[in-house]
Image 1 (cartoon, one colour):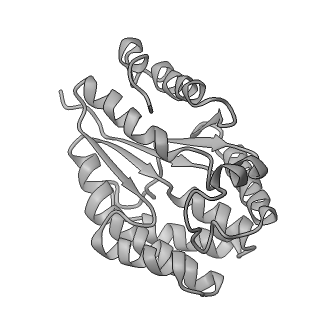
Image 2: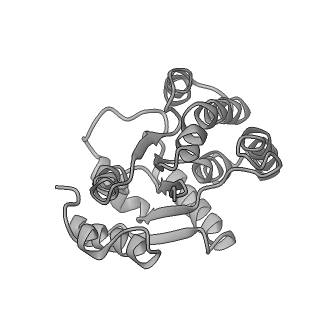
Length: 225
């Protein structure tokens, strides 16, 4: 029997360390025979990557920003995520819609009702069940204090338009993530991202072992170096 696809998203404020664990988890899934697609948002397709460059670098208001992000998401869903899930693959995506509600909604103070409307428009009519809105099977939230994240990012690279925001902005973003997790506790898995990297990896893999998606032997091997 073919195995169903899994759509797993990774969320957290800039500097939380989520990106360093995605490839390790991909390797763990591949080690037990799964085909894995790793992607990111905004981005994942040629069009979405162009929109990502605009969103991260060009000044714009919150509505324009949100429209571009959801346009990129629609293209990403149509051309990468949905086809991979239809093939039974595991899709690991660095950010998805929760980031939009956290950054544009909580961070920028943009209308959550408008974001919900855009979410339905962009994410409905893609799966075989045409009336259902595509959501992740699991969202892994790397929870980290904004002050700690800022220390990690300091001097790491030239900041983009979001990374250059003050700590107060990231406090609002972090609260936005907390609100999303509280509204969908069955979909979210919270990790304490303040711990050492190998401890975060142990937290991460234990989530997938409990769900029966990873074998214990595979989960205890590898991880980010």
